Image 1 (cartoon, rainbow, N blue to C red):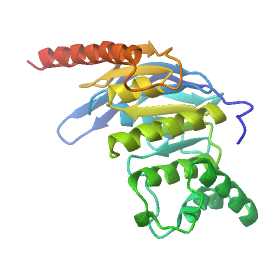
Image 2 (cartoon, one colour; image 1 turned 60 degrees about the horizontal axis):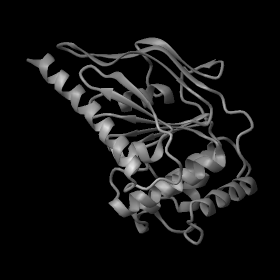
Image 3 (tube, helix red, strand yellow; image 1 turned 135 degrees about the vertical axis):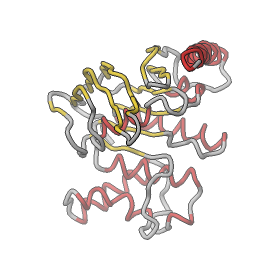
Image 4 (cartoon, rainbow, N blue to C red; image 1 turned 90 degrees about the horizontal axis):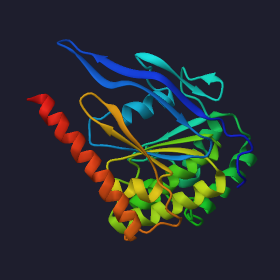
Length: 263
């Protein structure tokens, strides 16, 4: 594994999303501007319905914004591409493939020769501590192991940007904390840009360089908080808990305002 020589910045300009329904339109995301520096770890924090996943889908190119533009470097995002990989909560792994087959899948789609696919896949399987499980099928793995496979598959094609949509939400507390450490280690080794969606305040502070706080109805950005705590971070650290308290207060205030608007 080597750090990317040149990771492009991510820029959003006036990006919004409105879904048109049979009875009314729904504003999922109000216009926003956002700059993410190369190699930055950004957590998108907010309750359900605030547009976090919508924003990831737009950046991934799986959906198109109603207004605005998204750029990776100087290139405008109009469709999915190998420079951006989205990792879902359930991993979206193929149950008929082994661990090795899943990790090689993206490489095969890109036309990478077999010997090179095997070498790259083995590198990342070892990086996520799954050596020895290459021939295992997905149903034979624990939840944490499945997410490691999803991470290895994403990293194998060497994207500049990882988009992670609540990937650890279904894991137990101890496994989630181990995955935090694994993801932080890999991020520091590879200098990938990461956008990580979560509704868990502690998780956001434990992982992010920045925490973008979003409020629902309609989805909008209400705070951009820098996290300068040293790494590695413990979920029980007093300084981390203090920042968690501040962000929780921000979310509660936003929820209270939304409640007033609904009256």
